[in-house]
Length: 304
Length: 304
Figure 1 (cartoon, rainbow over the protein chains, first blue to last red):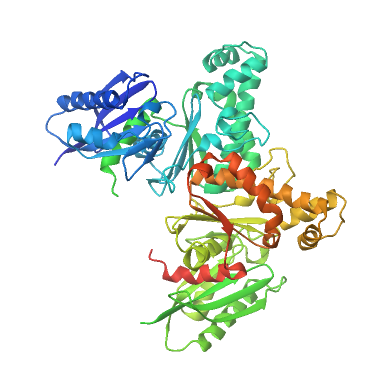
Figure 2: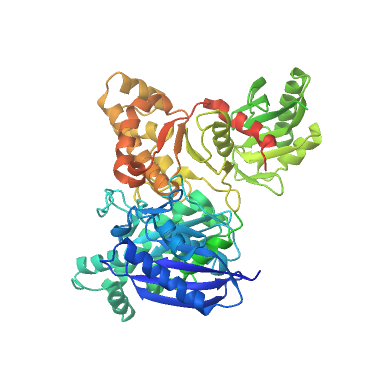
């Protein structure tokens, strides 16, 4: 047996899928847009086509199964997705069984940020450790926790909502009902909002703000410093809670690393005596936007 | 074979030990004061005497081993204790091997708060779950995390420093170098300090403040409400991170539950959509100051 698996990363705007062998080598990949108006049947049909396209490209190997990273909470027993804010049409849809019926193979669902963390653990920045935390700094902030080599799922599959760590009890309001959530202070959207607050402009993307910071703009640098401080509070909490060896950051904010990381590291150093006393790395993730599909592809190979 | 084990809870002021059978029934117990000036040899001799006293009281059973809960970080491979703030004379002392040599049995060390969490999981408030967090609200705030039935140790045995979660980024300074640590806003000492700040008196214990609150004093009630809010921020973070089914509180602040819990629950409800969407209990631990010795006694029985 010479197995391979297929990992699918289903996002709100993109569908990425890859065929991967048991050593983590990518054999083939496909990508397409996720239609925002598509219903569950249409999305599953698109996933099915991606899987068939990959199977057609791989020969001489057996398909061990399909893993699918989905943007929401996975109800494991039922194989459904709930709370999918960016794909509300999939809420409660029997994703797992609908795919399995179409392609007749073993299908495993996993939350997308958890899958990304698993991908980094398998063949990315975390391949030498069994315990890590991943923070994805995009429009929002997602999280995945690998403990003892496994995804920490939580009781109802809802663990690692790290974007909703309170970093400032009276901070910015969040759609979740809290205020001061990490993702309202240190995401791409938070950077845009802060750029507006300091008068840089009403419609700047985090990338625009990055270019201003790179050009020497003090206000743009203040924005990233502020985001870095918020990240530092959250990371210090995570380090004090887990004492893991590795904390990874990924996502759209990463290019601005040089502008937010110094403030982030200063906060972590001051706020976590665990950080100061135990070897702890805070570094960039390595797989970029392919982490999710690698992690999803790993699911059928898991030893448990 | 009809095994029993001995659990020792070594604190800064008290040494408690119990002989416990494999079902968690206490067969015998002893307690003595920990002499603050005692050196490592003296403390180990006292532990040895406690163990011998217990062995003498148990007949017809075989000793499976001895577990010892210690107030600090355990360096597992070496069997030593480091960072023991309340027992500095044991810092770096070969506790495990010194005890094992004296009584010729298997000895396992564990951090005291971790041991208490394990005790609650074994035969206390957590016996029906595999995943829980324990917060001990004493002079400081300690923590223990049980994940998948096991203590979450962290890479260097330093996990679960839950008293040092930042609940207020610009809050009270802490000896750890941070400010706004949970234990500076919601421990027995924090209650004393707040009582002074609101003019109730300079030397009130948290118990004194509790009696004032019970008598209807508004300032005393404000103090507990403030502590409850800080606990709520920390618990909301823990729930958003772990999505565990159970969070336990124990320690000297527990009698004031009625005065801090309403504010705590209100904060948790508002700050954690996981709490609002997944069955999550926040309740009092059940074993009181015997949790640590039960958890220590469980160590030799662990299936791993």
